[in-house]
Image (cartoon, rainbow, N blue to C red):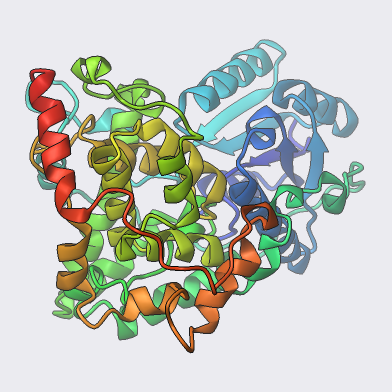
Length: 472
């Protein structure tokens, strides 16, 4: 066993630095075999997240090659695939980074228990989160249901210093066979949208580190204000990299802490956003229904509209609601694969409150379209906006998308960047929307500006009336 290889099973942790499982494997001095498994959770990914994962795997394989290592790709059920690799390689251990969604927990628990029974060392490590969800408790021993007390509890905690990338990754004498990444066809469902979105991808660990460095140097001072302005490049842009673990939250946290110590005004807001991500995982761990049902269970009685093909929902999906903020944000999504955070709140509020449509329809649409899709953050964001989630004041929080645009995009820079109709000289980004969307939608920049599906100022009346009729 002292010379048997260690399999490092990669999932959403496509980096070499600050990787506890890889670091521990290399520290054994035994050969290390990096593995990625295309199992059912990968197969079920939406079109954009799956495509982005494929790109990430290719870049990560290149990073391993620079260390004279290889990423072994296999397709099949995780446990069965790992057992086959153990038999082929003589591996005596399997290490991996923890994931926290219910399906991953069930899979990983079965893998760990079965391999241990078979005499194989099976060990999971942190790294995807700064604070393991079960380590953050209220004074009475329960879990936090509101963000601000959660932030107050963890903001003073020590966050482990990031680990360096291994100087070398010990290689086995013989490498097992690997699938070809191209044969997995990870981007097949993106169709023509892939070539439009691709320039907006910041791919891999090196790009993520460069983006973090540039953000801290140039943008974090003032981030507390600019993060809310969709027409300004004022965010970190790290969501797609954090989603696949191309950078760790620990690395982001320590960079933010250094910026705060230097007196940069937006640094604490950046730290709070990192903790907001942790809070989403905290809730998912303690209340897995966050992913599939109303987090506040009394909302099960709310009369959501549930037809994903209703005309008003199709207009929302197409960015043709006639509401500038909503339409601009939806079009940004199709061209870039991401959406400004302020836009996410507005489009979610409009769908669930102006249109009274179930948040699950929006959640599933984002799940298919976002290259920065994250199970916990997506679910919490949608439920927060819908009112069924952890928002402390959901009853009257109904965003007016016109006044929101007046406040955060006064000159309409964001709206003009993404909406072509009615403009004599639309931007290239606005035109790219028509190249990214399905041809079957039959849309053209020469189309008329649509009338509002529901007027911006009507949303609050509609939502409050529905809530009051159901006793909310």
